Length: 401
Image 1: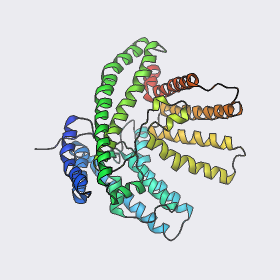
Image 2: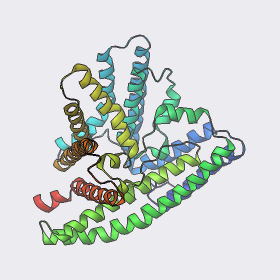
Image 3: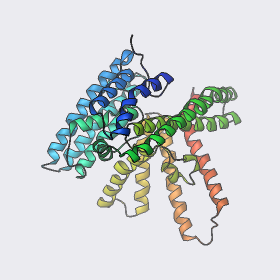
Image 4: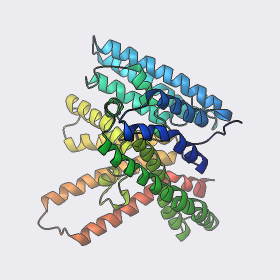
């Protein structure tokens, strides 16, 4: 009997296998507060096999090659960092860590849509983990390197395909210090709750929005052409679908991590209740936005201010925002709508900053109450949905094909 290829959390049979596989881990943590190290490795190999094996064996080989490449690269940089700290070698290490991802992103653009042989599900999120390691070694925050722990961090199967993006030091702490019985009981309760909420989000609400409503509004918008009420309907339905589908996946990943005794960070925190676009990014795909904030934006700001390239801190900040969101847009793909999506959000962030500065100067003259807060939430929701309409690529289909 051969095992079928399964995308993580995409079908009920996956959860059946998951429940059987996790039972010994749950039992050991609950009654003995011990990790079953060897067994967890076997479980990891099993779920990686059904995710990257079978007809997708090329992805499996790409994953193996990728892990070998990153492990050697991080080890080499760590060995160098213990003796010296020259910037040129740091930047080279970061470039080499990003190189496989860059090749997979550029290849379809150069080959009329054909994917790269280096590509596999989750390569972006593994790359974020690798770059994070190198940067924190550079900063002196990671003082020891254990290849075995690093590989476990990279290949942590609950989050390998689409995050959330964990931090190595936090993951290593969980790995070395299993939760107490009281802590694990709380994690177990939250884990089960997250799994059931994930079923609600992804397989009920997300399924209805994506499989029932979205084809209807899509067909209506294409039939009508141009700007229409159908297009507006598509914008809202797609935005809600994207949230419930992705948030549902994230709940599965975090819930599974909790059952295994790992306090993986959450990815969504009621993002559509944000009262401005900056608050939205503190609630939406949080592990990704925080990663870009900590490892791209803050470092870029430090560099620009150190070099004094711009006299105004406001100009420096705005340049940083545009660089950040353009990079995020390009990361999603080399298409006009992803790049426009990045420019759009950078513009919104800059406008929001200007508005916050204006409000501070006229605090006593401008009203601030529940009504203004509700209006801010409403307007932010409209702005976010408009951005997700751009992100969907539907406008490309509607106007240019």
